[in-house]
Length: 463
Ligand code: SF4
Ligand code: FES
Image (cartoon, rainbow, N blue to C red; front, side, top):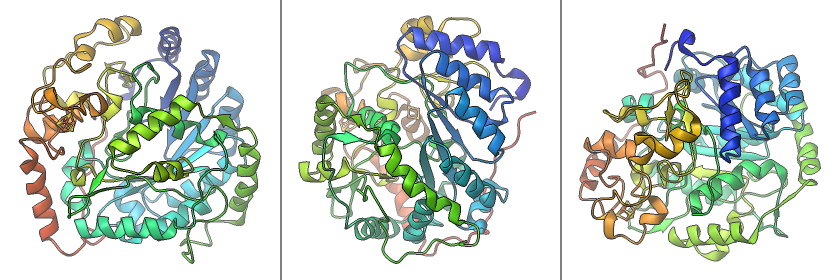
């Protein structure tokens, strides 16, 4: 993380947004850290709107009050993703290092009173995944159009705490059973549309399916939370070796859980119920899903070993479940391919192909203060390094999946093997898969779940 005095100024960010739009980028994701700590956040949203960029604020919700939210809406904000660490204060505080749950719930209530598209992200891990049904019920009570249940991905802070966060195989299989059970009443869509609240979801699915002709996004979730949250679907490998779903459908209306009660009922107040009405209103402004998008998604589903019927059901999904990479059979197409559709600009102006790329040594990341976005995108060594498929080593070099997953995640390959150009070792075809299996063996040898009060290692605040 950069210290505050190193951060880009308002004028510098506005210039970057203009350059992003000029080279054809479509989305800007304002993330953190915590983007609401920027005192100019409203101006930044207005600049995104002025440049016709779809804006998504990824926030903890702490610091969001009625006045700020209203200003953001008026400035043209399109979407909010609110992140939760748990449905219970104890578990949420253990991850966040501060008790903020009730503030987040208040933020959800305020968001529901607006017309913003709204996603709730809940991070699951070894200590809370056994309460998955409760977590889903909790998220539903908050009233979003979309719920993302994301297992922790192991970068940065999460890597340091991996032993406390990675679920056992038994926990993961149990969670998949829970998902199937609580979504068993899900219906496929009745037509070829998705509602406006799912715009972000549709975009993400396009990223997963990998379209050669599309260069979409801008600074996507530079997310500490990719560590904790950016969703990319990974086909899960069961202990029998079968691939199974990486995401599950839910009903497009009403509750999907049966009998589960959200905790903290005193806190989740009745105002949130108004969102059910709002959701129907928002779905009135439906956006047509193109047939090309459907075809790409079907290709992706078939690659993952799913049936077209399940893919049709997934098209109705308001819940996305992201499995832990380490239990995957094949890696995720991280960032949709390095340098292929996403630029992350960190607070100090460094342009990177992903949020974690700085872990890879000896890469020089250009700064938007010194070079235009176009020039960085097209010419900088950092963006060329793992772009396309020419650089791939075996077994990726001769693998038919190379244009789907691009050999997996470069940062994960480096973190697990010391070689950023290696096949992502979560791939079952990787000669270094044993590095992942060794971790899983240790994790699965520990039967008990660590108690919530077990101390995590926390990040320090840069000065
Ligand atoms: Fe993907 Fe490489 Fe594994 Fe093939 S060998 S599935 S390209 S990571
Ligand atoms: Fe996957 Fe960096 S996080 S390439």
